[in-house]
Image (cartoon, rainbow, N blue to C red; front, side, top):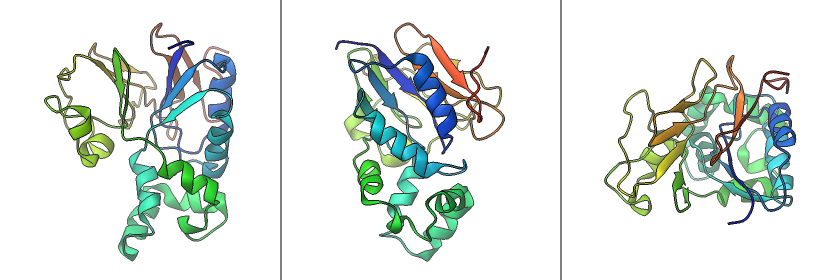
Length: 220
């Protein structure tokens, strides 16, 4: 693989922060950027975030993982009205305001296609990437969607995976705005939708770029 291996945590509709870290990292066409999911909900600009990622996929090798919030939006077309109520409570109301519509079925087709084509996981020789968590003794292809997208490190911190690879995850927001690195697992959801920041990381060098909701870079 040529170029850098990069990853970015849960964005939640904060496009200004997304643009700030992508610009600061100076992402190049040969770079691979793994996005860990939860592109929408809670923040003010879910529509802008999805469009930004679609455009970014033409500038580098973007690998989008499906998050639980993204999954909820996709599920609206196949689940009952109660599912909509649940989604709205999880921040879907902000997403609908962003799109100016009443249902995810009214999103631009290109945006629905982007979410529908997101992966359950991605792996390289040394690392694997999932939105939320994993079961240590199961190959990635056998993991359940509930574990991959909904499990939380607050409930259970998994041990080393049977593959021997290092896990890169999001989903469990860190209130102090700092990544968690315990060796076999790194969590980079640094609570952009709260009082934290958005994190983009060079996986091999561990260099970080972080920005708050307004797009102000950490340390700048």
